Length: 113
Image (tube, rainbow, N blue to C red):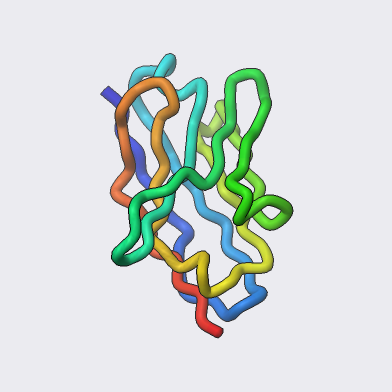
């Protein structure tokens, strides 16, 4: 089992920045790959970014060049640095283990125009 706790959400204006953190505890093999998802009201949950044990990363087209995912295994933490935020980035953001079906409780990001 894996326990995930997100933090770092908040309210910012367009163009602002936030850094999300997700601390994880539990089965190590589940956390070799990690992902961030988001879900806006009335919309389906979507994959935002992933980081793999190889060090490779992927980003949704909508956040490329603005968001950066990173992982610190010594701190059991995965981060999502979000810059140049837009109102359409408003959503609940969740982290998820890549190799096992565990989710955090989410952290709210609100971007006002």
